[in-house]
Length: 121
Image 1 (cartoon, rainbow, N blue to C red):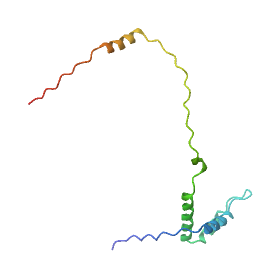
Image 2 (image 1 turned 180 degrees about the vertical axis):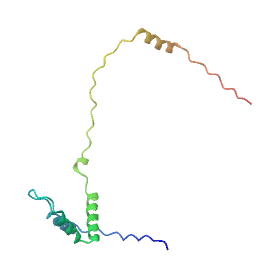
Image 3 (image 1 turned 180 degrees about the horizontal axis):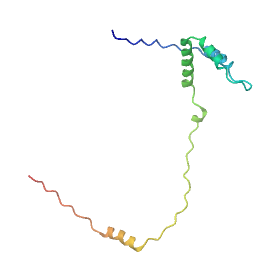
Image 4 (image 1 turned 60 degrees about the horizontal axis):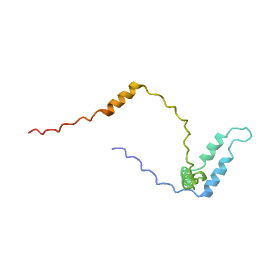
């Protein structure tokens, strides 16, 4: 017999805001106070009292609230257009007579006439 994969459980509906508020208040008891470190053992016990489903529901509610939150004030402002930096005027360099003659010779040349391609039979 082949091993069949277990079906995934149905998605948990999100928790209410009151449940999330209660969860966050409970976590605040374990925060660092007056130079004391975070009570990791207390947090572990607090989370062990909750079911996996309730933790998933609270996580889902928090993610929904984050994604549905209004955009921040910074996004409402139009972006400021950047100004180009002012460039210093460039000095014109003198060209040597040899380079001028090369340029001139290219301009004076007549274009090469192309022969029409002859069709072969």
